[in-house]
Image 1 (tube, rainbow, N blue to C red):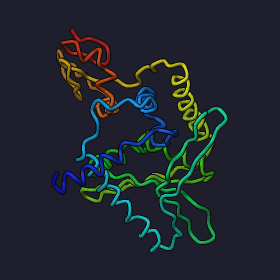
Image 2 (image 1 turned 120 degrees about the horizontal axis):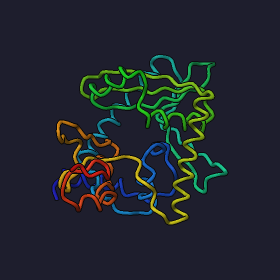
Image 3 (image 1 turned 180 degrees about the vertical axis):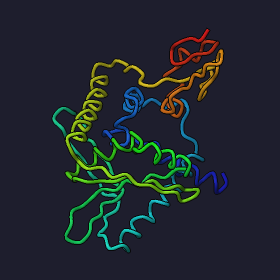
Image 4 (image 1 turned 60 degrees about the horizontal axis):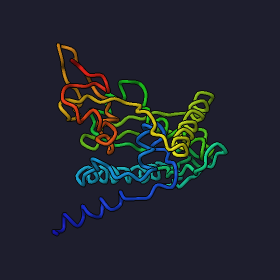
Length: 254
């Protein structure tokens, strides 16, 4: 094993963690995907070392932000652990907020830093709203930590493109927070009943292979990225993958 293989092995080993809690980052993930994790099923298409290197590089970019906030005059706390117990849940929700920051004599705010390619960040900015999974994660942190304001800072790791969205705790976020708690409760329900949850997203499948999209009779069939990138998608769609032909979700395209 050469040095690169050794470093890859360290990253891959970190991914093998027993699931004991709910995590804010999976609040809006497919309930079946989360159920697979709780059941301890091995991924059918596990994340590769290269992808983990990319995520690690993104995490390195995150380290710049607290330093800049401090230089701008903010008090800063990094990677603050937070946990939350709700009566409707058997398990804790546990997370780690990227950054807490505040001006002197002011109140704490939460900042979550997200890095990706600048083109994707530009598209997020043009949409006028953060990505749903990031918004949900921030909402959970606001309510778990009892903080009124948070923001999502997006940074392009290829071109340093950046944009930010600010979220204030209000009736809308309270409603969404309760919905997210219900999603965690639903996962626990399926664990107790030992029933497999329904799929929440769809894929495009061509002759036993998951595709991002395909065309048929000039019509485009495009799968959800959540399914395409899920580490359990081959198990989840095994019954369809075993069949020849073209499928969108479970609908066969003749």
